[in-house]
Image (cartoon, rainbow over all chains, first blue to last red; front, side, top):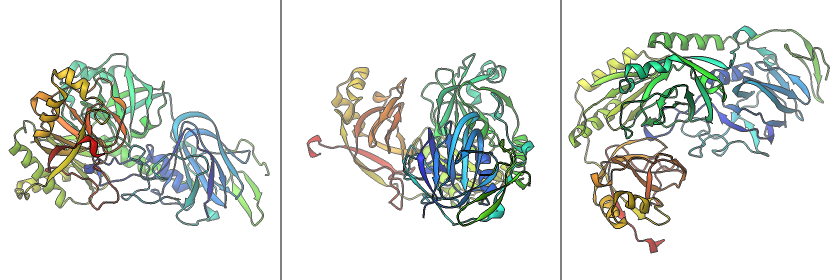
Amino acid sequence: MPVAKVLEPGFLTTVQDLGRYGYRHQGVPVSGGVDPWALRTANMLVGNSPGDAALEITLQGPALLFLRDCIVAVTGADMELHLSGHKVPMWESFFCSAGDILSFGYRREGCRSYLAISGGIDVPVVLGSRSTLLTAGFGGLAGRRLKKGDLIKTVRRSLEITQVGNKLPGDQRPVYPSKISVKVIRGINSDRFSKREYAKLFESPFEVTGRFDRMGCCLEGQNTIISNSAATMESYPVVPGSIQVLPSGNLIVLLNDSQSTGGYPQIACVISGEVWKIGQAVPGNKIVFEETDINTAHEILNMKGKVFSNVRKESAVRFYKRTEKHCYEINLQNCPEKGNDI
Amino acid sequence: MKIRYLGDSALVLFYEGAESERDIRQLQRDYYSLREQAPDGISDIVLCYNSIGVYYNPQMITPDNVVQYIRARLAGGTKKTGKPNIISIPVYYGGRYGPDLSKLAEYLNMTEEEIIRYHSQKTYTVWGIGFLPGFPYMGKLPPELVVPRKTTPAPKVAAGSVAVAGFQTGIYPFDSPGGWHVIGWTPFKMFDLERPELCLLKPGDKVNFTVAERHTI
């Protein structure tokens, strides 16, 4: 039996896991959650494996009707969450019973939220991953975004009530400021830029434009950057995080659904521990680049893994929620309506 | 050969100046050789026109160890690959199948028939797969057909479209936006999840385009 039914799909909601590796030589992008840390955390909060499939929710959230009892957690971009009319917190696992409706309200900051369901979302595994690749129409739910009426299933029927009330401590949650500092490594084609042009990358902030999707995010600077290579440069390998300079002098930062090779010169590359920052940026945000080296990049990546695995259980405000079959004790902290019995 | 960091999770091997057929064959041999015994932690190896991308998981292997693997593997000499596959791909040129052919003819100051003849006369080498699943980068185009890509990409290019840009020709496996000039269309599926070999073409394959008669479809 499905766990939930989609009442409203939201702006762009897809099934994603940690990505599809080993097929880039056939032109298949890695895909997966653009903010893998938020996705992993959501899974860990509900007792799943970090790499289980979850929903990636962009800018505006869906509305889901639960068809059976389960545990849910939402992480990432800060959105107002309501469970059958009652406010519920982000970054914390909560219990949903059959008949509950989870809806998303106003988005305060960040771009993408992740919703994990206990048992992990089940869609067919395509080339080793459940991630949706919209450009090729495979993976996820029939290779497309969620739409009204879709049914969501889980891999396992999992309902360990001890997993309710898990939370990521407040001081370890990421923030999504409007001015974002991002570390980069010198790009493979940086020799196609004069010293003067290369320096422009670090001199002033770049603004996120409305042209952004899962493939890449276009940025505009106060000054355009001009490469000294021909317009028809041969293609080179790229990674999510590669910063390409377009002929217009603007930048595009590639993300998880980007192609595996690219023909625009790559001036720099966002370190893998910070690509999520670009994925959480919304139009109008300012990005400031800062150069770093490979060792620092790897240290940041390792630290990030530790912080985000630090999910712990904290008891705080208690209230009871009665369903026909069960009476559960649920921990909810940071709940604006404290001690509110449902 | 130069090796550079591509971010902190990949390395790129540059074969600059690799131009001749022989250089390109060597590059392809190195590519297949590197793929053969890649240690855990190396997830992907990608071939481009004159470079190879080696992707690794920094939490499983250090870049120094990846470089060591690359050097050791390539120092051992790479074995010759067998005879390349030759694949004939039928193309319906022009009209609604090749919406950019007439404009291209005007731009190049040629007739459509001349472009079709130049494009279908040559045998191309597949240099790499990229851009979209199964999209083959092939070359070299006859110098007469070299044109820059479109300044603004077309919002939708149909799956199966045969297109040219720079000194390359390619085939779109899926409907997608695209900046190449579409001169024809083939019914062949470039990428198919139902096949054991997902992609119709692989690096090193040779490709001929044959002119298909329009009245046959």
